[in-house]
Image (cartoon, rainbow, N blue to C red; front, side, top):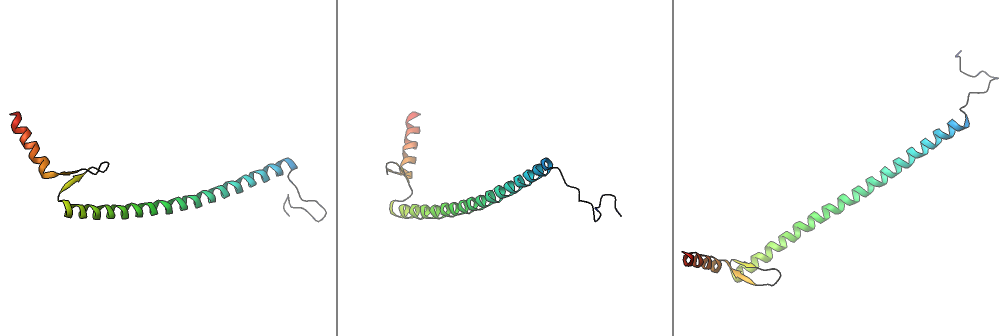
Length: 106
C-alpha cells in the first residue's frame, strides 16, 4: 500500500484553508483572463470585418471617382480640376504658357 493513501479509518490529507483559498483565487483569475481574451478575440474579429468593409468601400469609391473623371475628360478634354473651387485648367494651355514664359526669359 502507498505511504500517503488513506486507509479505511484515516481521513484524507487536505490543504490548509489559506493554500486552498489561494489556489481557488488563482483559478478564478485564470478564468477571468480566458474570458477577457475571448472577448478581445471577438472584438478583433468585429474590427477585422469592419476594416474589410472599409477597404471594399474605398475600392468602390475609387471606381466611382475614375468613372467621374472619365465623364469630365469626355466633356472637357484632358483637364485638371481644382476640387475646392471647381476651376478647370486645360493641360495644353498650361503647357503653352510655360513655353512662352521660357522664351520670354531668354
